[in-house]
Length: 376
Image (cartoon, rainbow, N blue to C red):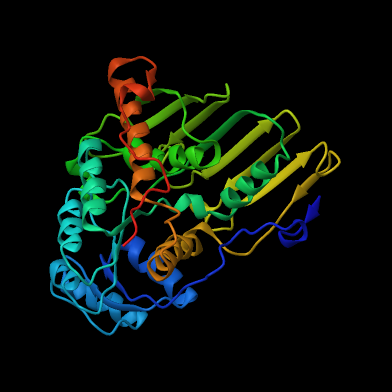
């Protein structure tokens, strides 16, 4: 099987075009400490301040990553005149208030929020409207779009190497480390894990027409929930069918049992097939292999890279914010696009509760067309 990412002109990682806009980070948990800040240090992004709910945790993360300023509260960080970009890694019930506080600060140019953007689609729509009215950039950290296998797959699709795509699937059997704050919410896997995959399918194929979602409890998860294990089927305007499966049980959880946690994906077209893995559960680079009747002569080709979704993809997410602030270029991940992903998640929950297929038109996504004037 042929190797090498560059040989066929693929770009698994983004080019860092801008790296001089000052970032203030809110949050000191795993995602911030192990992903955001690791990626920013590697990319050379300037982080000037950090804050969290607990000052001692923020101080420990600041010492680890050489951040010179620790604020007592997230609000104080947002008010720091040196901060141009506010980077949030905070629970979604508290995130909207912090976004609104940032929108009121003249010195803040942009906000990078976590997903889900809010606990409801209506609240997400309001935040998008308020950011537009304030003339601020608001982006949402849909970082799976920057996973190396997803980026290369998108490039293969854009070249037409697979012909007309007829079927796609993302198949996850892995155990997420659920954040404690999720125990207080009434939504679990679809809103916090499937959102990665549903957004990736939108990134690859556009907006679907309809979704059918079924779910069951995960007997391993200790707190109350309804959507522990989820299966969603999406139908796109072209007729493409896609399946997104999130199994957070992944076999018995006991000493001596050798589980096989993984995330695998597959895309089939009239002229070829691509398949791959997402390396996150095992801490390895993601993989991709594809064969095309006209692009590879029917032979399987396997591009390769050394970078990973965690943490390098997070550099791509912040880079598009940095570049938009510096140049006025449109965001690659504008909040308006994320509202469409939230609408898809909302449609999935409606499908679960009403036990039927839900058309996206029923949800009234309410997102403006991309390319609108949402720049500072």
